[in-house]
Structures are given as C-alpha cells and as structure tokens.
Image (tube, rainbow, N blue to C red; front, side, top):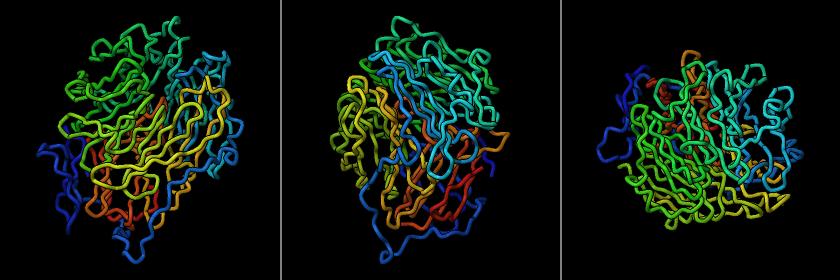
Length: 543
C-alpha cells in the first residue's frame, strides 16, 4: 500500500471503491487530499452498517467523575510557578496503558517547591508512583518545571519526554526498561538559558514536538518570554536525537514583550507539513506557516487580528464542522475564541454564535465525550471556578451547550491560576478521560468519563510505526474514519492543551454505526495504511 509522497496531507477521495463510499468535503477545488487506495485496503469483514432505528439508544448526559482517590492518586500533588505545571498522559513503558507525568517546580507565590512525578498505569484502573525507579524524580529534582511534550525523539521506538524548565529545558530519553536518563547536554537539547531576572515574575515556558523539515524525525519548539531572544527557539533533530539550534534561520518571529503560553504544531492549511501556532499572554497571536521547513508569519493575513483575545493560555485543533479542515479553540482569561477555518487560509471567530465563551480558561481539548461523531470541548478554569464541558449539538453550524464540572477545593487560591489538562482513555473502556493539575499544591484530579453511550460506537487508533519508520507514537500522522457519509479526521500531536501532552492515539466516536466503512492512516513519509469494514469498540494498533 505504498503511494508517492504528495504535498497535501490527506486525500479522502476514494479510488476503485466497490459500492458507494463517502466522498471528501468540497474544499473549493484545491488539491488538498491524496487518493486512498481502497482496492488495496485490508478488509476486516466486520460490521460497519448503521444500527437500525428501532435498536438505537441515545447517549446520556456528559458525565465526568473524580476517581482520583480510587485510582491511587490521592496523595499526588502538583505545584510551581503560576504559569508552570505540565502533564503527559500517554504510554511510556510500551504496555499500551496511559501513564502520567506531572511536571512541577517552585511557586513564585508561596516559595514552596514541588516534586515532579511519574505514575505507572497498572492496567486495573490504578497507578503506582515510579518516580524514583524510573530516574525521572532525580532528573528533575530541583528543576523549575513548566511543561512537557512526549514523543520518540531519538528514533529508538519508545516515547521520550521533553520538559520545559528553568534555566534550560530537559531532554529525558526513554531507555526502554522503565528508566529515563537526562541527555540534555549530550544531545544539545537544552536551548538557551532563561534570564534569571524574568523567571520569578510568573512567566511561562511551553514546548511542542513536530517535524518541521519533513525529514521523518521530531523537532522541538520552546516558547517563553524568559529567553534572551526572540521569545521562542527551534531545535532541529539530526534523526538520532541530537539537536541543532536553527532559530535564526527558521523564520520564527515572536513578540519578545509577550508571554508565550500556548504552542502547537498542526497543519492548518492542509498542505502536508506542520505549521506552528504560538499564542502570547498580552502579546497577541502568532501563526507561522511552514513552507519547506521555513516559517512565515501570517497572523494578519489569516484574519487573526480580528479575534478578541487578551490572555491566551492553551490551544487544540479538530474539524468541528466536518468540512475537511482543522478548526481551533484557544483558552483565554476572558472569552475563549473558537476559530472556524474558512478553508482558504483564513479564520473567523464564531465563539458567540457557537456558545463556547467560558471564562478564565487554561488546559483544554476537543474530544468526543459521548461518541456521537462530533467533537465536544473540555476547558479547565483557574482557582475555584468549575471546569467546563461544551457539548456539541451535532449541527453543521457549530453550536454547543455548556455543562459545569465541579473540582475539589484548591489549596491556595492565590497560587492556583494555571491548570494543566491532558486527555487519554486510561482504562480502555472506549471513552476519553481527563487529568488536571494546578500550581498551588492541590492534588491532581483524574476524571473518569462515565457518560452512558447508548448505542454510540467508539474507535481508537494507536499509530504504531514499524522500526524503520520513526517516530514512535506516530506524531504527525493523520487518521481518518468514515461512517456513512461522514468523514472524521484527527492528527497525532505532541504538546498542546496547556503545557501538556495527550495520549498518542486518535479517539473518535462513530455515532449510530456498528463500525467504520474504512479507516486510513497517512504517515508523514507519505505511506498510507487503509482498513475496510472495521467494527466499533476497538483499540486498533495500525502499522
């Protein structure tokens, strides 16, 4: 199932299909999709037809339940700078169960220091603290941690960690035996040191991983107003996990007066490479389009100057209206902008129309919490304010209903501003769960998704590249799923939300279908893997 490398990210046009198949949305005639070879697809022969109306049961209300104590997390706290604390919620030991990394540091309010932790998922709904045996505790001891991104940075087939920290960032390489080692200096991965005079003022430092130059490995971006220049730096991966600073040649342009708080690699223009979003507290918004490994600032051209936003804090992307391109939600101290992609390189703010304003937002994600085939939104709010769920009504013109989610009382309201959030199906029940962490020494909170799904189907795809194709975890791959006339897609990303990294999988709802008529993975290399007739309720590992 090989196909030549084409510039577009994915084509959902169907070639040689037997019988009617869903076609891609009309994107103005631009060649934004490469053909999927369904004749060469692996037919699993599983049910993928719609559930008869007489047998259908609707999903219940979205329900997130705090199970932290039962999961063994009751004594796990987080804390640090009011713009610090990060979470990774993904499999680190190769057993397919999402583990937890909590990156903490020193509070600029109370002066307290909090330890970073690694918590291994036992696979029975509980976690054990392996911070000491893994080496992570020692590697980050005394470090002022701010954020974390998870991905295979050295191409050895397991998932490593990149930690945004002061004074320099930290590269923790996974040894494949449950241990991590600090390889920052050896691999040239720390970046420039932060200015000590800026660190104590509640500044941010956020990191994300993506393949800037399309050479098959993960490069690094780190953004912070504590840096000596110009607000962000880029490290190019040599393919074996050693790095070179290419900031000056990359085209990165960040307002040095801003405080970068949200960063994400994502292909907003469907041209097959990963563009870079950086949103700055007080300093505006930066959209950097990637063209052959060089970045060009296009914020004004994309219509972002018209977006009302004061203090952006987090970002995520999904195709909320199923028109074939990625839309974006940006958390904010104030209304949270929902940016609809017009498909021509521009965006329009539909926040009020969609009913997703919220207040005081931090960590967030698009996830289909009730598996109806439409992405909902979770956004964590600061201090004692409730977390928010925005439930999609499943309409072509996006509209959402707001649901409040209570959280445990915070320990110190004056130090609890930042809320990191990460997302995974930690118990393999097909539903996406939520993990949050605050900066004031409160315990972390694990919300189990207990939404009654009715007859809605779920499908999870774990992208598992063979050894010769890196990086592990499939960061940069695009996964598409078809049910009836509906085509959904998501990209595997590393470093999004607020200073955090989600499970390296794609989690989609199938609505009232017994399965997907086809599932496709387009790899960053241009290779594609296509399956037909894939039954619901599975966790697929696709090579």
